[in-house]
Image (cartoon, rainbow, N blue to C red; front, side, top):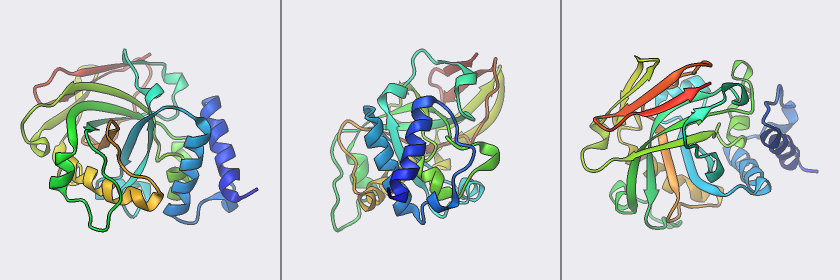
Length: 254
């Protein structure tokens, strides 16, 4: 059995059983990002869950330094993990992290090609942009993360998703984003936190995915990376996320 399949076995079981993996044998840690994404693709295929689209993470230097990653990262997102109403059993989550994100729905494919996709071209392939939240999870304990390639193999910490209202008009980079916990604002950011503009992150993914044997397709949703930093909720918290003047998204952690 290959090391790819052995690590995939571990991660598939952890997903199906809703648990974390205390440690990964050093021999199973992918040697590089390409190998890690190959494992992630195998895990997604074996799970057989309906895809939602993709997530992007590590879109700031601070985030990449914290996670020890040389470039932004990506992972599959899954349709069954879109949550509504937004009430989460905290005990069932794996080191959950709340991240306010811009969610983009694609109207057209962005297949591989010789010339890189430009931001303008990518913007033309967007059907809609929504406010949203990823409740990121990790199959490895936050206090003892393995090498970042193992995190990539785990879908880059993909978790559960809450889709909010559509954003119509305005400058996404300038849109303020606040995250409050039990009525007190704990995080502030804007669309500019996401590589300067959320659609810049989308263009990055459009040009990076073909190296992993895939590409962006019409109908997929892409969460473009946190605009608010990371926040670890506690049981009993009511987290409220607001994008500009749009209605707040509320998530209860019971």
